[in-house]
Image (tube, rainbow, N blue to C red):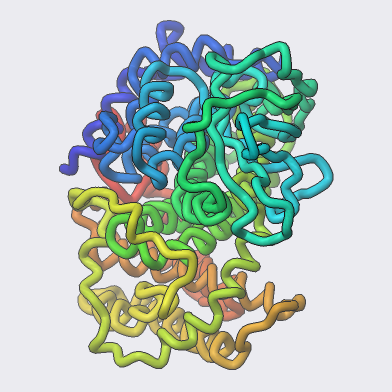
Length: 561
């Protein structure tokens, strides 16, 4: 078992059973705090006491981060209990990351701030400019003393945070080299020149500090630039390649909550004098929800493993993962809401309040670190590279064993990140080879699902090759980008089916793969006849895991036994 999985199990045990009054995160308290829109200060303190913040700092700078899956799995455990707390605490990882990419003295300074448990935020967005970072107006004067002017909004932990990594303009012309990053630490600046914008009242993550901040010519020490002046946008874009997969841990935590609620309801509910679990339609619907959760898990975990295996491909892979995982979990929540009916909107009955909170909270995840449109646009920008990769010989493929989430990480090398890929995604190129391997010893149902998926993937690849590149993508380009993301998700499922050294009992059976590939093929326009029966069987297997108090997962060892 990898060190990463074992460490994740430790925090699961530390946080405790949400139904236990002695737990650090208690379900009833989470719901009541959300209703009152209260910041989860007690939980954040408990997470700092355990040392979660150390998983945000690379080992090079004195922390514990050697594998991105560590940060993801720890965050998932928090999000399973309270997505608001995971957002509030996890923002520090996002805020500090550019310093790790820049290196040098500023990285060590940032590490000391993070290690102390203080919150670090990431000041990118500004009112009225949406995702257009090039038009950033917040600026630093550098002709003389360095002074910070302008403001950021909306920003997570803008008010509560001690420090902020701020994207600023250091040159007047509109170009990528006009932007820089600075560290604004409230413990060393004149707070009389700092003001705050009110907390934004949100539909989800109600208790989080989503607010804004303004600086009125605040003097900064001259050595507080993160990276070189003019390097700001490049560092942000590379950092997003890391933060996007980490954000999917929030969706996975939300999916855990939804699946547990659905399975408990399926097991306990009686309808028309019969137990819901004995109704074939109900078990098929529940199994489809479970299948979507497993698709999201496989995609997130394999996507994160790319950071160490193929960091040069993260410009594409991070966008694929960040689009498909929140989108899949959003669909999961919609289906779970219909399945639960009125129970999904209530607060009082068992787990109902936790579900409706998780459903609201999860909708925010798709907006973090580039919304769905931004990520689809990033995929479109890689169409040319994907097409070049598709023309390469299959024999050129490197081994895929390094993408196994269960193996030990060789460590992080942020220096290998690139803004664009040369040949798209190795995993997408490997689909024919993966399909051939996965068909060995596969059940007839799984073999049929693999064949249909392989053919659908080849069709998508051909469409991408014919689409070319464009500066002004239309609706058809965005629809094709969605299909590419679905194809990537299916490839991740195939990879987990063929190479998973941490396979759970559920993963070792063909049923989940038939159900998952069936769901993917349906979204690719190739529905399979075996999907419904596979979903029914998958629901039964998931019920057994739920009765044992285990999460429904493809991987063993990351949770407390």
